[in-house]
Image 1 (cartoon, rainbow, N blue to C red):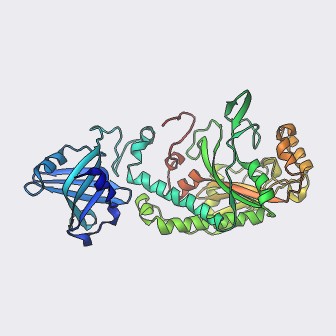
Image 2: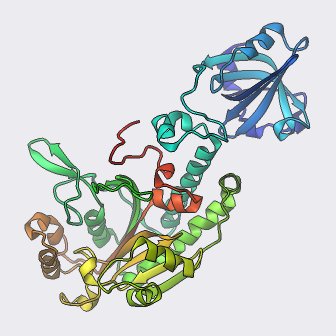
Image 3: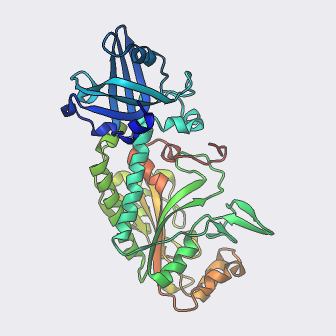
Length: 433
């Protein structure tokens, strides 16, 4: 049989049902499992839509096909043409009796990692062979959910008139201050990988009013925790004519929309991961109110333990802590009342699943105040001249926030480490694959 023709007529495995008993079909996929029982050989073929059993009977299946089935290694890519047969014992209640099998990509006999559902291969080695790790049902479930998260985010803000933007990933100065930047040589100049799209999304919001994006950012902190990586995908929005309370409402609505969509579209994936999601409610607390509930010192960030404790009080819900001290928020967060000496700011954080998933707030749109705040933070206003000047020509007050896609995936999927929620993680030690 012509392989090209068979592929042209290919059906997705998930489309084939036992009701098609007797119908001839062509399928293609990866060999997930193989069992030999004397006069019977069972192959389990997998594609993105599901699995199906291929059954060879000695004396009934053509001899060359039956013998050929014995020598196929797991994860080899096959094209199969055959007849659907109803079978109560087969997965999904159907199997295929093959008339034609072609190995179009042979896998080596000894796989470097276990790709089964019960794999005990440790995560570092699985990440070394990530291209094979994607063959595991659990891994595919995680990234199916992540796909729904990002798609839901985009769709939510498309429907609300936000403009998607693509900010630059190479910048000339720190976006948020600090020294945790990756330097790059940019022709004769020194540049950096962007640690945030912050400054650029503000510029757009001040002209096009509402913007959102999903963009990579890089942070050069030398950490090694279960919730940090050094290259992140951020889901950001920025909006003109909005204060911190207004912008928090948008975060509340999109998180609820994402979780609802995941529960509706990813039931099988959640079951596979052993996750039971509830649609969260939003809890709003001032920074001072939150301190009273979990302890801590005014002017300091919450510790990871305090974040977990606060989430435990409001189990499964989205917890906002707003009106943080200006001293621990970035230079671009508006002090309350626009007073450069104000103790509190228009900045907030959001906690979900025991960790911080978002920070944001109202931005400073007044050039003179922005210069003052840069100096307070020990930054040179000259390095931010283009940014400051962008607010000299009719900039409205505006607000925004950012969510880490991988961290939200980690929380929704109930994963032990953010690296499992990252297709190709980058940390202090990993630059490949």
